[in-house]
Amino acid sequence: MSDLPHRMDPSQADGGWPAVVSATELSNSFLGNLIEICFVTRDHQRTMEGLVRLGIGPWRIYTFDSRTVTQRTYRGADADYAIKVCFADVGDLAVEIMQPLYGPSIFQEYLDEHGEGIQHIAFDIAGRPWAERISEFGGRGFPVSQSGRFIDQNAFAFFETEPATGTTFETYDIPADFVWPEPEAWFPAPPPSGQRPPVRSQGDGTSGNERGIRRLYRPGRERG
Image 1: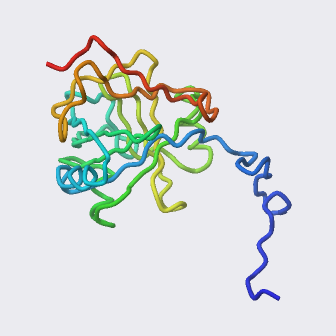
Image 2: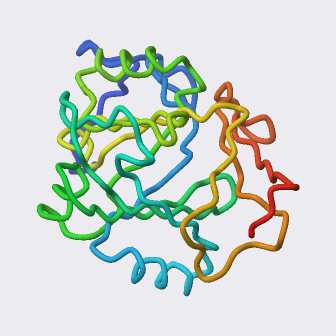
C-alpha cells in the first residue's frame, strides 16, 4: 500500500469545495484564457536581451506614467507611479517585462521581497464586463492591489492573490478597435514596414481557433 495520504476528490468533499465539471473545469471556474506572463526586473534592457537570445521578440517599449496611464491606483488609493513596460508575443501569449521606476507599486515590492522573476500572470475572464471581473475577484477574497488605464482605453487591474497562490493575477480589457501606439523604441529592431503588433481584444473564453484573442496587423500605420 502507498504511504501517501489519501487525497479526497473535491467534487465529493464535504468541505465546500467546488464540483468537478470536466477534466479542465470546476463549477466555480471564471478566469477564461491565460493571455500573459510578466517578468519583473531591475533592468528591462538586460532582461530583453536575455529573452531575445531565446528567440522571444521583437520588443516594444513604453513608459507607464502620468502621461500615458490614467486612474492609477495602489491598494485602493490614487497613486503616482511609473513603470517601464515592454511587450513581445509568443503565439497567443503576451510576454511582458516591467521595471518599476518610481512610486508605490506591487512590482517594487516583488523585487524587494523576491528579487527578479515572473511576478504575475493575466487572464481575460472570458471577456466579461469590467465591473464583473473586479467583483468576481473581490467576492473570492482578492481585492485590487494596483490598477490603471493605458492611454485611457486599456483598463488593467492586479489582485491580492499572491498569499493564496504564490503569484499575482491580473486581468485587462482591450477594446476591439484598440491600436497600439507607436512605442518609444523597438528591440532588437522594428517589424517589417506595415506590420503591427497583435491586439488581444476580449472574447468569450472559448478555446482553439475561436479564442477571444485576435492577431490584428494594422496596415497603413507604418512606422516612421
